[in-house]
Length: 478
Picture 1 (cartoon, rainbow, N blue to C red):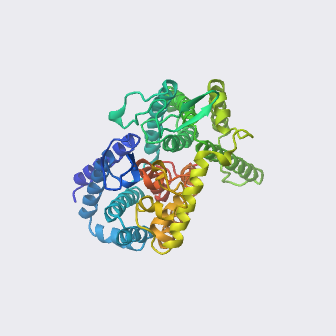
Picture 2 (picture 1 turned 135 degrees about the vertical axis):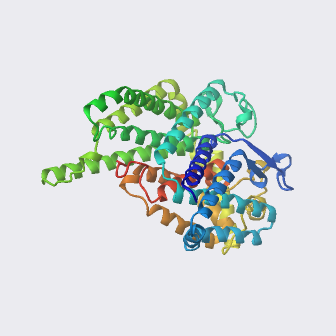
Picture 3 (picture 1 turned 180 degrees about the vertical axis):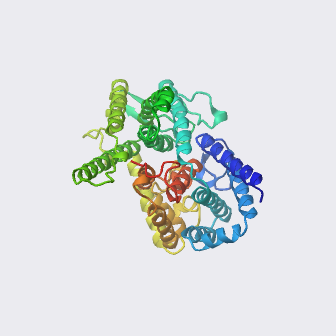
């Protein structure tokens, strides 16, 4: 393969991948209904087949990557040898086998195709894409756009006419819309162009941790740079830092307006964890300095950047409390009049969990088959389900076990272990994001059931599993 063709294929695959990141938030799709798509007129999204604009982009990435590998001497052999000995292959194989046990074979086949798509993107990112910094920048830019959309939606309490870009149509008094009571009214939560506010929250959480890293990474731009060069880039750095500061405030506001309590919690936990790690790094740096060690680690500890991030977060929190303080309190308040255990969403989740457990007990080996839990919920429910209650269990791990059995769940855990063991101090921010995903998996299903959630999960997994550290920033995680 000539050098020019190598450069062309590599650049083209990267171009497609960047397009995938930019288009990921936009829920542009076409749906194919099945016989089980509707219950008494209510559309059950999990029982339909969806084709997304991002599917076309993924095909481009995978085909160009495959062509590049085929042009490489021994490329396919090397890739196949790596894949067949990896947990990725076994997890995919179990997903494919699940078609056989699926009662609804077409849904099982569709589910297997989707997980194949996600795993191919994971392998591409893991083996052929290491430019993490650029990906994080694109995520931040996309999140700023989504935050603006979310703010406009919340202020108007109505969708803003972006249906062509994947925006869900919603208006006051509509059934099935994510909303919450506050005062004497009910408010609709911000959606962005995602199918649900919780998924918008995941995207914004990813972006907020990303922008914190980008601010911290700016402190290392001056290392090994002459005074003349520093002077020439100072204006550029000021512009970048101003942009990132605005991003923190805008994205934080977007997170608030999703009114997703799990997103609020995981964001707070991630920021607290980063602060704890920074304290540990500070202690280690000072210990090395006091003992006169040559390598003190001072190059990776930047207290001014940490202070800047804290100030920006506090400013954002203050502004949001001024404008939305009452709504925030109403969303998180638990009192005698509003018992969390009696909240409809919590009661429904408990019901879904019980149904999933019963399905697992009935089919412990290989499960019900991909995307077959919802269509068979009635068999395991202690009561007749209303149409809108036909939805996946809000727990990633129970959903995987119910559909792929204990065998599939074991393969998934094995795969996660192999991804997480690549984590290091240099990948701390990626590990925090992915760890946040795993925590959120305890409370929702979007990493398995929805295109945007699945793509974000496996892309971040690929970046974490990549053999290099953050692109061009080896050893600069924190």
